[in-house]
Length: 141
Image (cartoon, rainbow, N blue to C red; front, side, top):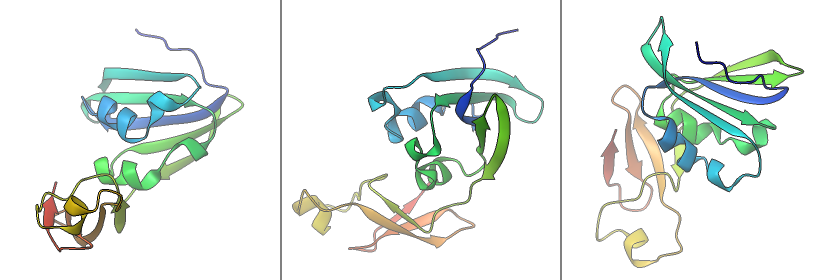
């Protein structure tokens, strides 16, 4: 059994689909933080078979829940204080995401104006479909 040291205060991202932890790591910008981050890949899970887990030292201000919800809304966010889980947050698909996915339409204003944010709005929750705010380009996960 693998044992990763306890977390006095921080966040544990649990129930990540196996193999998605590094995508989450980079989308959240965790490589830029000056705190401990532990990634556990392919951990055994009764519910999922295999899963990834990310442990982050520090507060919830490091985490953008909208990005997490977009990448995988089945992730559980556990808030740890004094070595205990004090709160569990469940995620949902965000209504709006900014600078997570780029618009692929070559005629979109975001392709011409480099400084504009790439903003997508959720249009179909069942199909997980988003549309670009500027050109209406459709993006389905």
